[in-house]
Length: 330
Image 1 (spheres, rainbow, N blue to C red):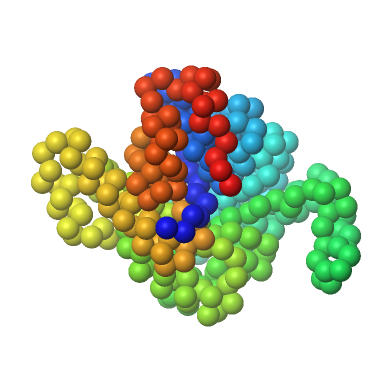
Image 2: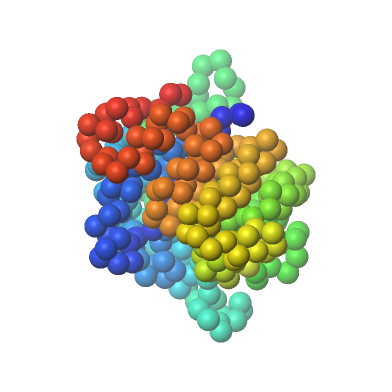
């Protein structure tokens, strides 16, 4: 099977128990060789400090891994958003997932709280903050007309945005979703990450429509490996998606935890295979701060080899074990 990059999403720990386990889980995920690790950020800045703590941990303990901070703009002033972006950049974060965020419950669209109304505006603000911190000084590359780089070899901020295979809940039409993605690209976004999907064809249909409209940035499909009926129900509630009926029934009727785990891994692996075969440029995995199931999915489809997988899920993942794992082959 074609090898593609993969990435993981983490979120700040919601309990002391998970907080104690999170460094070990992050170490195992990072040792698998992800393209980047993103960390969620609550609407209105509700988890800014906790999110930054996780990002700092990754930067300080796993310096070879690119980190991506989630940013929302709903309810934010320009000044607050500016300060937040600068804080993340000062901590060493130079990749962002810029999203509008959910409106407060019951709030009408025409009474949008905050100064920044769209993800495209947030993308522009991130680029502006980077330029203010250290102005971008472009020079031409000899022999490559139209190509410029920073004189100091600095990387521009990588800014991802959200894409919705089955439409954003507040959009009025499919065309509005595509136009919104085009606006994000025009604002300077260079990557799109889909909302979690359960059907590969939903992703392919959206990508085809986006390409036909002029969207050129890479679009990553996102998968949440689900291993319990309650977990599936929660993910469907959050995403508004529909899971395949046979998958939902299989999880519901399976009496054992091990059996449900196998059903969830098998479903996610087959979905990943279909996406890769269809041309997806990479795979983004929502981990729910766990490592066993996401790593099992990657091993099942051959994105990490069996020897590495065995090390990554070993009961003791010491510094010696990490040294044995080593760096992934490029």
